[in-house]
Length: 113
Image 1: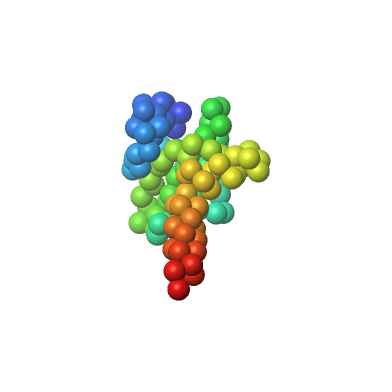
Image 2: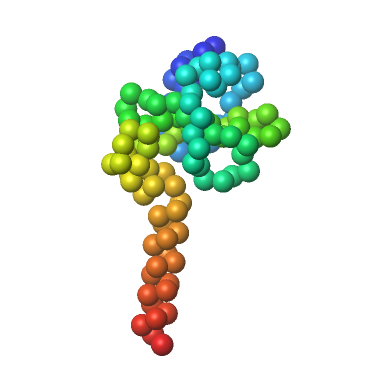
């Protein structure tokens, strides 16, 4: 089975936000067209790889030190430009939500005192 066939098989789950462990028999990521991605939410992984999809999303794979590979779909591929990067930060990462909560907490504490 190729990566593309595996992605097609699990597309509905990936599109719903599932994180799926990738079988070891699939080709190495670089051979399958994945590119290393330097910035990713730290989840204990040793490296991150991404494969651009034709719909503007990407398949993102976390590679762990024990050899596990876990894939998920990012709705926006930040490698496509500033707009997709901002959309990725707002939708696909927890950072914007965390920043908004912190900002609201700081703002409410400074106005109540």
